[in-house]
View 1 (cartoon, rainbow, N blue to C red):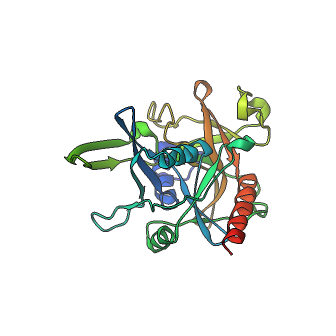
View 2: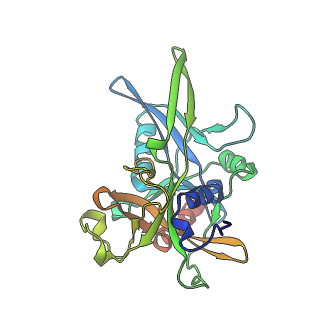
View 3: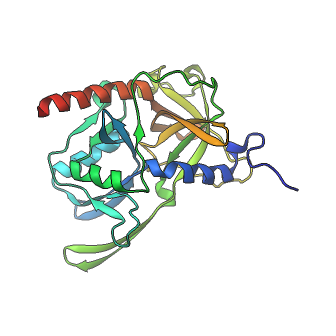
Length: 287
């Protein structure tokens, strides 16, 4: 029997996660960091997306992710920091982070868990030339979505439980690291703040985006459990038109209530408004 992939609630199936992963991967750049703490080396990749604001490229993630990276960078504990930009040339699949005074933004002090790092000129040039990457070009004051209600919602990111990092020393000061990860797209339904189970901390904000993760309708127990590593991932809404998938960035995922599989995300318009102000201030300072 021949069936249409897009029949019914197709986007809740595990096959839809694979479809979305291929569609969305171009917006992602992971930032891999290894750092020393109490004589131990910790290694982890962070989820983030490329966003263009006023012709500047930003790496946008959760605020607590950005602040952790900056803290380790500034206190000198970082051994390695590099972008996983998936360049097609063997041996050049990553780009070392440019050593500099980092321009970054975090909304945590205002109770909003999102952040951004301004990419250097060299990083920007590399990413714009990379055919595997495509920044989201965002503008404040988005027009109303013409189709009205979205067809569905998806949370995308790289969970640590589906990543693998192998390492072995090459010299006393260098190591060989092999890294693999999987972009996972989880189906969501948007939930009103009143229907969310938890209202503490930043979840007391009734203007944030809240969602309920749905299990895949065709496979049991195949979703990540903890969502660690997915912080900073985008929440997309989507609809299809004339054979094309149209997406809108709804927010940046920042926290998770595991027991109820509910998520909070910083809404796009509020986030972009502040990032645009920040970018304008940087431009004025540079004059």
